[in-house]
Length: 401
Image 1 (cartoon, rainbow, N blue to C red):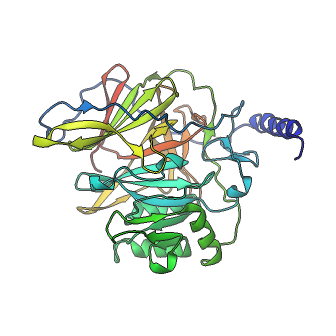
Image 2 (image 1 turned 60 degrees about the horizontal axis):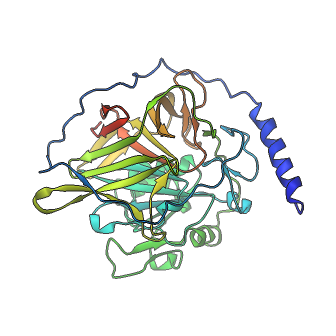
Image 3 (image 1 turned 180 degrees about the horizontal axis):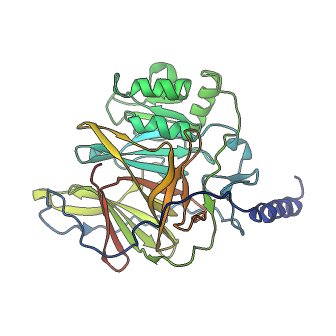
């Protein structure tokens, strides 16, 4: 539309009409455990000293796009609004393609800082065994020119990518226990790094676990041209967004994610940017632990996310570094805790079918409103603990299943 005032009037009118629609009724089980303080479980390994903190870099975190003035979702999103962030996009044509999923290393520590995480709409964070974790970043409303380093796929990726009707960039997979699942459920949508996938997905360096990267725009083009995936807008209804936080909740100034005594991530709420900033452990001499800002190598800034969600899901151990995580067909709902605007909110997550995104609900069965912006989702085992060590100071300690 040539007249910008008319464009904004039309968008606001669309939002007002969509916000009046009542959400589809759902059956939700009884309320999950109430958020409360409790002693945290102690990992079997213990660092030799209390973690210390290093100040973040001077550059400001990547800012969020301006949030819409009204709530949107969990369905009937305006055409120019990204249903994974609740924000308008600069190029609506991007929304007529499959979301790009990228499997990104967090271990070995030499893989840090990663590139491209600051531009992800969503990041799923799952345990992969032997005390380590891995990230699956999702790009839909914007692209990133360099994302990685890319590592091997896991069984859960077949579920997640199909739910969002996406494509997956990965570098290798267990030939007997992972690759058949990718082939069965994703087919041409799973893109394994190889010489033929360049320049979209390439080993750009010395052929190590740190040298495979992707350009998400080129990967989208590769999927369309080489894998013959016709452009079409995926159905991504499921998440609700509101600039105003829900009522209630408990103080949530920070939440740590402890997979192991020597693998700890930390999110600290920054009141200036109104986002959660990411810190990651570093192990020094005599196993001393310090917490360092986790930056985006490409952007040169500390990672900042608008929402952090701890979603509890069943893990099944197949091998020391291979697990199944049950995501599909979670009709009744499992516990989820949302951290936004410095507050923790109890909720539920659901995955009602194999080809629709995760949904987040209040214990009373209403959509749980996320802050418009990007979201980091930790897939915690159902036996994991989430406790308050002090008012507003939360710790998730991971356990299987």
